[in-house]
Length: 169
Image (cartoon, rainbow, N blue to C red):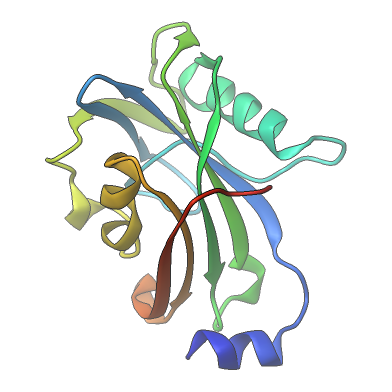
């Protein structure tokens, strides 16, 4: 389904979620999701906002829970709107943060298994299908606003990726 068509039929606002990527030199930390939504895919760490949290607090809490790290310098790098016409409850706006400093050492938890990757050698075939359309740009230093519509087996049906000068959340 085309994004414009989905938005017309489903005008409600998207729930907020986060992704956080740790960055060191020419590497990015990805984590293998071991259960739940996104299982068996490499991704940043993150999740849904809890009541009473601002979105930055969500990113910090999720990073602590999923890989035992406390990010110290979160910078918004992308805002991604995901639409799932077959599963509207999955639709969400994801605020993507980068962090270049943190407390702790990445550790495997019941939910995530972290691993460092070279920025130019990402396991894109083992990630969400949308990642190849925006993550390399963001890792090169650009800020991105994007929308994706997903079909069966989470394939990308439609997308729009724009490089922007600034992002507001």
